[in-house]
Length: 120
Image 1 (spheres, rainbow, N blue to C red):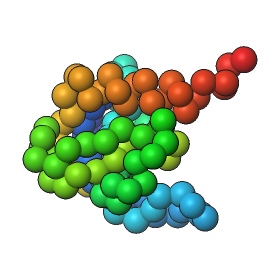
Image 2: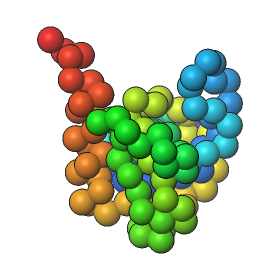
Image 3: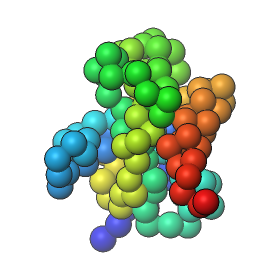
Image 4: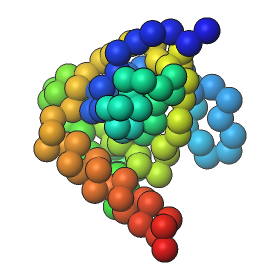
């Protein structure tokens, strides 16, 4: 059964991403919630973008660099907007940080780049 948990856009949660294939991010890792507030409030799933502390990966326009020690993020990290997936809320382990609105604007822009040709 899906747990009843309050989730907000811009929060960073530790998420269980098992069941990955190939280059998909997997394991237990931090992810930022990118789904909208209505979906977060009423849905049983959320949309997340994986975060990696392998900062040398931050070379794509779909990446947003997070500075360690800011917004509750422990290590220099990168949000990978090409690694987006929908997960059941039962995969959320615990909230670890909340990104600022400035950082979330960058996340939104990188996500738009990732989906740029989707609706053409």
